[in-house]
Image (cartoon, rainbow, N blue to C red):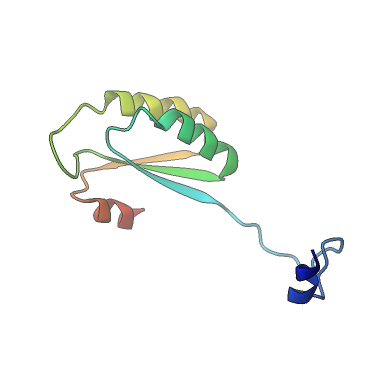
Length: 102
C-alpha cells in the first residue's frame, strides 16, 4: 500500500477523512424488452448493491417482431418487492432513445 502514501500522503487508511463526504447514491438503469430469462438474477443482485434500480421496459422491440412481455413483467413484479425498483414503460424506437431516457 505504499502507492497510497505517494498518491495521498495526508489521508492514510487508518485515519478518518479530513471532512465529511456527502452520502453517495448508486442507481442502476436496466433496459429490457423480452428479457425475462436474465432479469431475476440481475435484479436480485442490483437491489442488494444499489440504492435504487430503474427498469426501462420498451413496449416494442428495436428490431424484429413484437413478442409477449408477460414473462418480463412477471420477473419485474417479483423483484419490485424490494421497494427499490422503479419501472418506466414506453414505446422507445431505438436503443439510443431508450438509453438516453435513462
